[in-house]
Image 1 (cartoon, rainbow, N blue to C red):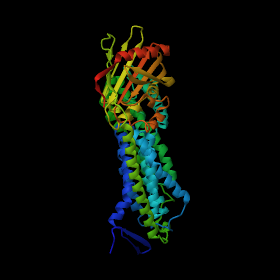
Image 2: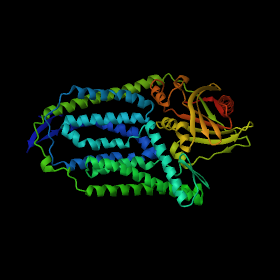
Image 3: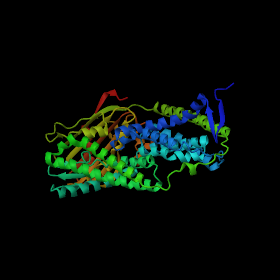
Length: 541
């Protein structure tokens, strides 16, 4: 009588067919399904909040399509397996890969959408998946399906440390080419970093210079087309720079069009054409790249797969050995993943039980100042930051200094910490042509018994030095958590402090007209004592 875990192996022709019971398939698939679900769930917020990576929403479907296409393409070519290789190096690598799931989850729970975590999860998931395929079908199957599975990496956002310099340089190059195009058609324009100044105003990065949004998507499409048409590696590699060139060309066209509209109708008119122009250019770029890929695929390829010559006689696949190995891996992963998830939740529950909620406070702008004026927030900024409450204003003090203040709040939630920490002066201000002279330097201020971690930056602006102060505040977090270190290390420190999902506040103040940093810092403290209002009757949870 068959048991629930019963497996039959029967030979058909020259190959072997392995029949697994339903329970066996559930046990084998379950840990890998969880890893992939968890990976996609981790990346989901970045795909839905960052326009640069919104195309990631379709990459899982494209990955499945490529796997099915490969299976159909090579279904007539049997896999050859001589059993499993007993390699201590391979087994040690897989054990290490599985072990790293524990520290990855610990850091992820504190800062769930920190980009390096996405890469660690992707590497662990893909590595364990490929090893599972090896145990099930051997090295030939790994070689056959490796590229479609690794294709998923095109949807994993690049770490900001690497992405920002590339995007900023490409955006500046894009703006420079647009200025030349405008000069040819007789429209005067001046470039300021990623911003273009024309007679009707400033065309900013949120309007036309969108950070080369199609760069990432064109890279993905290039790799997809190479696999879709089963090109050899030489053609696939050549297709990548082709996609890059097309992305740059179409971005120049898009930015030139929107800047021309701004010059003719005013900067405000950009909003009427922004989304339509972006979608049109993206579709045109995709269609052009598809056409280039199709033409390349029509060229003779001597390395194309020949089923008659590529077919090999399968050896003894040792079905029992493969089955035992994949079942052992699956059961081990199930036990390990459950242990990690339970341990992570216990760790943070115990540590957060000791945290005392902080006071409820907010920023009240000096509207009684006759020079005060509200700076409106654009719809693009609202979409980009996803804040729950935001306000910004500008005023002038009697000593002649000009102050700009930005205040944003995010309610408790998974995405709050990511969006609040992601936009810092050292990333955003250089994009508009400002040069950072120094910073960030941490200043711990105490305003009305509230610890305010303020980071100081000095920028060289068009009208002289700009003193920039930014505070990122979390309720219930002690001042020890705001170590004077890089923001990336502070994210890792969250494992010992608390999960960054209890709500966030960001204050950014820019002072111009003051050349002395010491005087600016003293004026900041006096100003915060007026701006910060504490509700002493309530406690923020």
